[in-house]
Length: 99
Image (cartoon, rainbow, N blue to C red; front, side, top):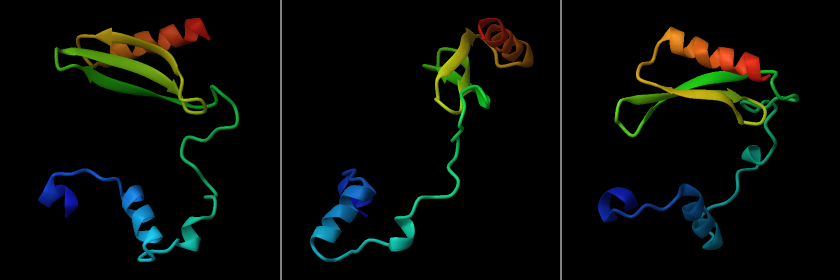
């Protein structure tokens, strides 16, 4: 409602902190415990990764990067005019040569 009516962006966490300070909200104990499984959490680097394609600034250039899921580090990447299998293979070859 605040965003729609007043055009002000306030994060949900900040609103919740304010409501807790005023005694209008409380912590949910079920949400305080550590989750048994966390997305992209790996014990060892290079045990899993994934490829992302991204359009750069709307000028027709696309970037392809391979990310390590453990560290979120960019392992290999390149800029191309088209998103296709051949360009993905070039980035994978770059990764194999580097590591």
